[in-house]
Length: 161
Image (cartoon, rainbow, N blue to C red; front, side):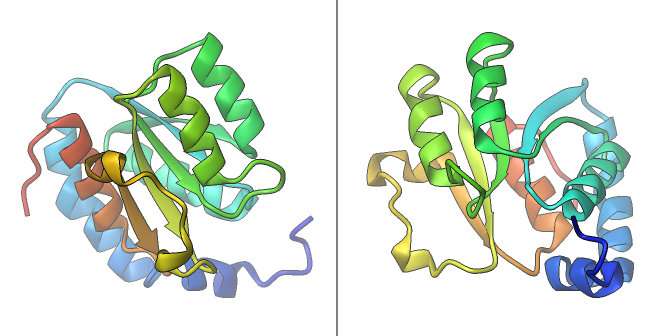
């Protein structure tokens, strides 16, 4: 599907830079590894970005269960787990990330979301104000350190800068 896409340009448009990302992973690795295993759901339709995020999370000591669409993530969350944190793109085929959040919150109101977007203006998001402390929206290009800090915040795990 992404055979015609220049992977280097794609990944550099998603992340600040490979060197910055590696540096952030190393800086945050010790903090994540000092605590028991943590697992999150990862929803991203772009194969390359999903794989890179999964590997980066793994390097930081965070397990992720990857999904290519919100429907599969919702099914898994409702039938297999009670997720504490979900890292999701907003723009997905079918159900989008904010719709996923609404459905998850109806069953698991304490679940926290880290939304990623490169194409939606923040003031266009339809997210409930009463859940403001349970989500963060990160604009692409992403800084991996921001993802790890958000996970640490939502899981109440310390992070060293």
